[in-house]
Amino acid sequence: MKPLSLVLLWHMHQPDYRDHETGEFMLPWVYLHAIKDYTDMAHHLERHPRVKAIVNFVPILLDQLEDYAQQFAQKKIRDPLLRLLATPDLNLITVSERLRILHSCFQSNHMTMQKPYPAYQHLHDLYDMLKEHGDMDLIYVSGQYLADLLMWYHLAWTGESVRRSHEVVVQLMTQGRNFSYADRMQLFSLIGELIQKLIPRYRELAASGQIELSTTPHFHPLAPLLIDFSSACDSLPDATLPASPAYPGGRERIMFHLKSAMSSHKQRFKVQPTGVWPAEGAISKALLNILMELGCQWSASGEGVLVNSLHKSYPDQSLPDRDHYLYRPYRVSDEKDGILCFFRDDKLSDMIGFEYSKWFGRDAAENFVHMLEKIHHEVQSIPYPVVSVILDGENAWESYPYNGYYFLNDLYELLGNHSFIQATTYRDYIGNLVYTQTEIKTLPALSAGSWVYGTFSTWISDHDKNLAWDLLCAAKQSYDLVMKSGRLTEEERSLAEQQLASCESSDWFWWFGDYNSPQAVASFDQLFRRNLSNLYHLLKLPIPATVLEPISHGGRYAEVIETMRRSS
Image (cartoon, helix red, strand yellow):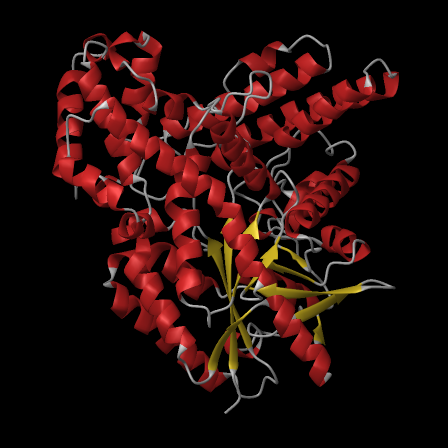
């Protein structure tokens, strides 16, 4: 029986949370996801060596993981929340530090990461009672309350595999309250150990051939928009664009991010990446031309981009059933080179991202495999059918009981033992196509878009998002003028270029708008403007007044996963 190839691509990404002027981490999400999600995902792969997958690490995430590992090695912690966990006497901390603990340590999925633990829930109930009287009452809580809150927040963020392999976590959770400084240091030391071992674990999985490690432009920029704002009109003809006609020197900036990503990948993993998952699955013909120029073998995007591209390629034809066009690679080429593009199954990817968390783990895993079996039955006419399931490898799991442990364990077990579904990687799949000399369809025209709705609407064509783009364009114009002036030293030029790269991340534009919570929007608004301010400082220019004013305020918060979007 002809096999069905399945490619699971887990995308691991967090933006740069560092204030490069002070070296401090402004938000704790890198180390929290490290001890929960990146650790658990490595564990599941290690337990199921017959299951292959792609793990896409954005280089700026790896930079920050290495930064944390170095902090623990040097015993100099630059993350305020982590530093407070290791502070001996919490009765002596400042008011702002107290408020940081109180405002940070309930930021998680309350249904799966708080309610299951009565002692943690009790701390939240006390907080709610005191909060009614404002921050002035909250600052009087005892050092013991703060110690217990810090402990429970970090315990709740430990991965299920960590709890099963480190008895100290279970002991501390069983203790429940009145945690001592020694207790806190036990957990603090474990966090350091987990982070320091993380990248070597994935390096070992890659060396064994079980996983393919792919990369993304270094600081996760929305590449098609940096190259050309008008690419947004491919999928949204009526899109409202920023006042600035274009991002100055966008193509060169994307080349910088890609070359930096490939260089750091080779330095860390001793091989060149064969493929690139672009930030947000956002592709355009101009971006793919750059990837061809750099020798990339593959890239990928969302199903909506393929649908739009087929409509653009064959405007007078109606599309057949998705089974006839989705489960194959497409060749996109220019005069000299070509690259293979894969398009994810949005339905299957969204089932993992948004739906299976409500199911029993085994039922969800069996349903997923059953849907693959149905696809296999429908695609017999395709020579080597391939199903692409691509999604965040970190953000979905906090909605699952036990961080998705049972779902992932059962899914990998079923896949590892299946007779005709073969979990593979794009690198191995392409190698098989070359070996068998299989003919690959060419995609005549490509419609620019992303894995969210097949458009760029999540990052542009909104008042607040466009304002952020205009602020970035103005900063880039100043950057270009200062760089041409020659008045910066080589070290100053390098620091300014790195700071600009951080400003170019897609994440800032994701959060602006009225469909995200005010708290989340405020955090990322402040981070983006802090990055712009630091850039002007490095350029030795005054900070424009517009950079000091909030860009966006968010709107009413619904119970959704704000870090993820459905495909449609």
